[in-house]
Length: 105
Length: 272
Image (cartoon, rainbow over all chains, first blue to last red; front, top):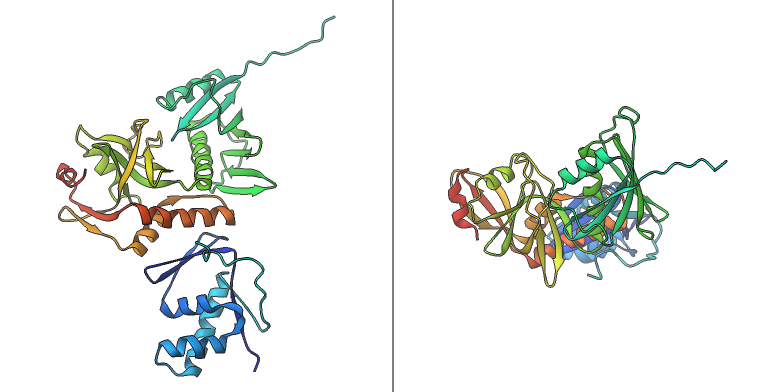
């Protein structure tokens, strides 16, 4: 089974406030507020770390959850975020060419 | 025989909202008179510089489509603003632009609002769906969607309150904080705001309820509410990011509270 890589879309604006991650799509100005799990996924989505590693090293450590179930949930979430254009997903590592939006703030 | 020529007199008016002057040139004296009346109190000095200068070309009614949606795009350094009743374009590098519209106040009003949202976004300011007023030298913003009570709270303001607008507030960064300016953009009250400004003290999120009370709003909710009430039209990723970060900056510097109120004058006992 191929691995999935995820990367934050550099063309969105993102800010964390009191533990809430808010992201605005530059494409259509839609605002997203991520919950804690989604925030962990978003922050770890560097394009180089496979999704299963993010799940095992970051999400399963934080929450008491079965790795297989967590990975399935994470894949569903990643695809949903990708549908909205705020996350990129690929079966190959994704090079990050520009700084992640919001991180410099 | 002398060369035949036509002299076209160019009439001009500077409309200065929020301290941002925009010059409008027209050849139509009746249209100029309408502008002078519509923006009374916001007419700037005729010789002053302007952030942008528009030549206004008037067209016959019915010559454009009836598309009510506005589209604001940028191509090769030129802003294009399009709606059924007008077309405007503007090049910030040259500060020159063109408006093609039917001779009515609604079209020019819409163009000016959009131009100001673009100018303000670049400097961390914004237009906000909110009433605003000055009391004791401090400005208060009252944000909310239609029917939230913007016009009601404006109408209830006591005589010592200076109204800036009952519909669209004009907010600019000033020093470490923000200032609110009067605008000619009116809601149901149909009364132009005073052309003055003051530092913003509080942003209130309006809600009608059984009693008057003020409650703090957590920063995340405050930011979401602010973003939901911002006027912004540009389909431009860079500017969307600017406006997004501006909302966070504002919330980090200005208190945001929920103001629940009974629609009578006692609510103003809580403000100022």
